[in-house]
Image (cartoon, rainbow over all chains, first blue to last red; front, side, top):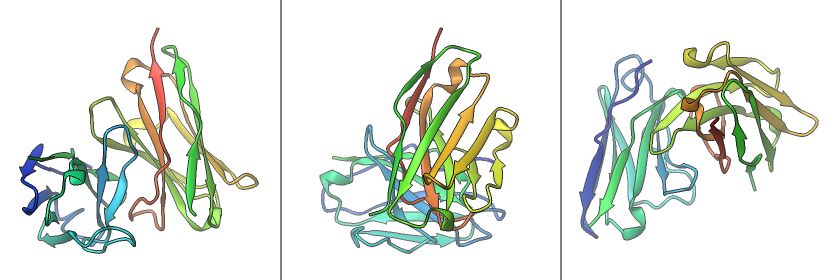
Length: 106
Length: 119
């Protein structure tokens, strides 16, 4: 399976909202509600932020939300904070990842 | 709490093999699948394969077929990933990650094991 497509970078100012897209095909993102999102700070292991397209694990801020339309899933972060600056990865079907998006908080 | 603790960093020569361990605690070991994912320096995440600790069945990414072997020891709640015929491109941080089903999310992740392949 080919990797999912994410923008290489996004940026936003504190308090703003940003959205990261994740585009696949009808065989992965579009065909199943098995999309998850991960946050990774430098030198750290990835952390689950969203699972099954739009569900938040316990302990994850409600500023993080997920959605899907067709073959594209999205992660939205509202009320940006400095600590949100990190790399974000999407995944589908537990075996294909996006290339990652570097979020910069200006 | 659920925890995955991996073995320490390794330095290997090209052509050698490496075996990384991942010890699970805080949950029923055989009730969850375990994936292995690697990340080369400055690069993204790459799925390597999955093992079902209950029966030991495995599924590997095509890229690693023939070079990777995943095993488990239920007596110590530990899974292992062995990669053979190492080359410089295998230099990466290797992670284990728990999953409720084969097709679903990874949570939590181990702390990662840096494997460096250098002559």
